Image 1: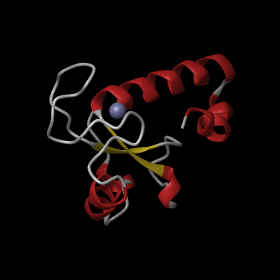
Image 2 (image 1 turned 180 degrees about the vertical axis):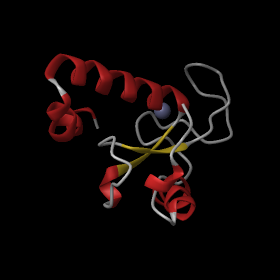
Image 3 (image 1 turned 135 degrees about the vertical axis):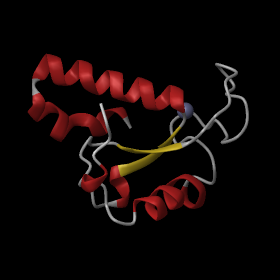
Image 4 (image 1 turned 120 degrees about the horizontal axis):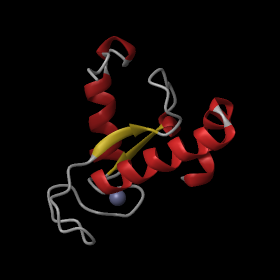
Length: 100
Ligand SMILES: [Zn+2]
């Protein structure tokens, strides 16, 4: 599925950089894995991503973003999908902070 860039903030690249390298100092905010180095668990090279913790692209607070390695991004999205399937979409909007 193609990414709908029109839903991202206009300054997304700057937000993403700030979250990953200024606030998180180049480390995953979930597990501490360092960008550009092998992941301590998987051994794969870590490429930090800025993720939306509430799963809304229109997020507008710094707390709505986290720096995550690929492993933690996948795990976070998988848990959110499981909870949304189990409890419905409204769960996604109100309860994801429990996982952070
Ligand atoms: Zn991680």
